[in-house]
Image (cartoon, rainbow, N blue to C red):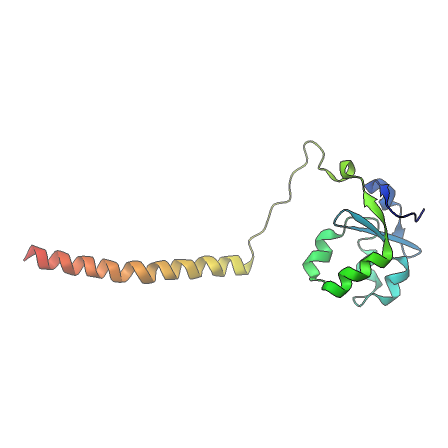
Length: 133
């Protein structure tokens, strides 16, 4: 079942979900990482937690470098059927969360705006007093 360029559904991949037969999907590509479980720097549990599932988000969140991405080629077994990866009717999209960085960026932008507007307001008031006299 390890023929190259084979197309799998997510339900096919979901059958490979244990330490003896561990497949993951990363960016619509299927990888048999069974032989990598003991060598994974984060430990085998990291892979077993996503065994038989789409692990794209987890893979990207960790920030794997180019070496890890190149290693994937060694474990490649095929592609995921795009029909099986599209959201079903009525499913909800994952809601994005606002991170601490996003909040700080917003505060920084506000401070810059106030730093510009406040002196401008003082200047306007000064001009107003001069014209009033």
